[in-house]
Image 1 (cartoon, rainbow, N blue to C red):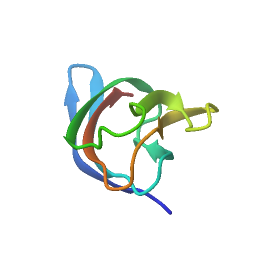
Image 2 (image 1 turned 180 degrees about the vertical axis):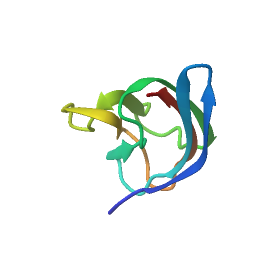
Image 3 (image 1 turned 180 degrees about the horizontal axis):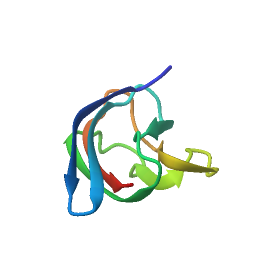
Image 4 (image 1 turned 90 degrees about the horizontal axis):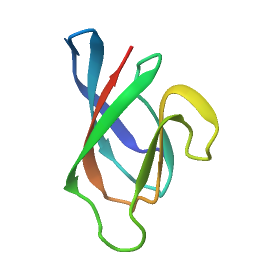
Amino acid sequence: MAWTVAVIDKYNEGNKRVHVLSCTADAATQNVDSELEVIDHFMISAQSISTAGDNPAVYANSGAAGTSIAGTLGCSGFTSGDVFYIKVYGR
């Protein structure tokens, strides 16, 4: 199944493009497209994330399986129903 991912805002900070994503997990892993060509860095803000099990992990410019995918966030270790925001900086 696919996560629910919505781009809720797009703007610039200095010379960086910024996309704010709202994510709801329905599986442990997912590749999340940021709609940017390259991700320079990102920040995660939890709305409701389960504390059971391992801490979730998110990797920039990578798929969930560790493959290199520019502009993608590789997410793993989430629980179905986790809700969070990601602020992605890139170009």
